[in-house]
Length: 111
Length: 113
Image 1 (cartoon, chains in turn purple, yellow):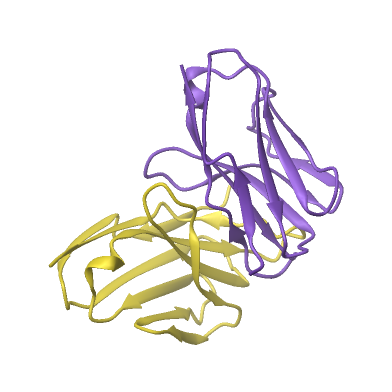
Image 2 (cartoon, chains in turn blue, cyan):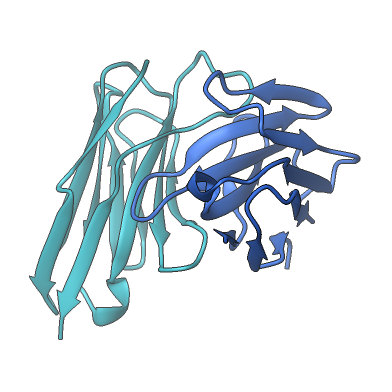
C-alpha cells in the first residue's frame, strides 16, 4: 500500500545533541510537510517542500532545518534540541490541491 | 492570520449516541478535510470535501462543506468505543498554491461503553 513512513517512531536525544528525523513516501506526491505537535494541540506547520522549493514558516526557529534529496525522502534536522523541542513530529504529503496524508509520527524526547 | 474555530473542544458521550462537531473560518475555503488522531499516532484522513454544499459519508461518518464556504461539520452516528480520539478539521483557502492547511484546535471525543 502506498504510504508515508517515518523513522524512527521514538527518538531520545540529549539536550544540544543534533538529531535527524526521516520521512519517506510511496505516494509520489510533490509536496512534503513537517509539523510539530505538542500534546492534544493541533499540528503546527514548520516548513514544506513543493518539489524542490523550500518554504519556511515565519515562526519556525532557525534550530530546525530540512532537506529533501529526492521526491521520496525528506529529513528534519534539529541542530541543538532544547527541552521545549520535545514533541511529536509529523510528516505529511500531498498533491497541491489534494488530500494531505500523514505518517505515524516520531515522538522526540529530549533529556 | 486565518483561524479555524472548532467546537466543541471535548465531548463525553454514551456508546450509541450520535455526535456532531463543526468548524468555522473567518475566510472562504475551497477544501475541508476531517482527520482522526489516536494517541501516539499520526492523523488519519476521514473525509475530504471540495465543493460548497457537498455532503459526503464514510460509513457512520458524514461531513458537509457549508454553503457559505466558511464552515463544515462532521457527524458520527451510533458511536462506538473505538471512535475515541481527537478529531481535527483542516481547511485550505484559494491563496495557497502549495497545499498548506489550516487546522482547527481539535475535538476530543470520549465514549462510555
